[in-house]
Amino acid sequence: MYDIQLLRITALDKRVPVTAGAMAAVIATLDVVSKESQLLLLLSVPIALIWFVRATVNHARSSEDVLRRIEEIEMAVNSLLGGQVIYFQSRHPSRGQKVGGRTGQESVAAVLATSLLVLAAAGYRMHAARLLPPGLEFTYMVVLGVVGVIVLGAGIRLSRYRYEPSLNLDCKLG
Image (cartoon, rainbow, N blue to C red; front, side):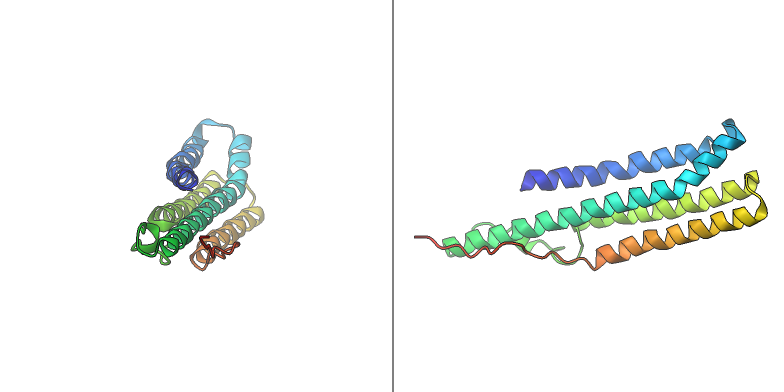
């Protein structure tokens, strides 16, 4: 179980700098590509950000599931042994307060902030480069706003997530 948790934490820790760096590189290099390529890149930003946020939130949610399962196992083992033998997750200070633990919460917050900044940068670049006629530019800005709401909604939904145990852990010796 701890290996699965390590996989989730590693995925969360790597996701933010790698993807944020890639997005920043796309925005930063727009000046050196053709207008058509700039338009294509800026149109792909909202879709890429939705994927980035959803994948990160999914890792945090899965991390929460693993943490709660480890907690259940600790409590079952302690019950079988009649005392507090193992108790790391079952007594952890952030237990039940931060979905996905502190790493999950910090990673998701960083992804949300990065996504909103990239959306703002994409909107600015689209406007500054005058890649679309005014009516279509307004539509693009609306799309960016909708994606911003989707991104924030994913963070809000994650904060309300609660692990639902799927198995009964009532164990009996004998």
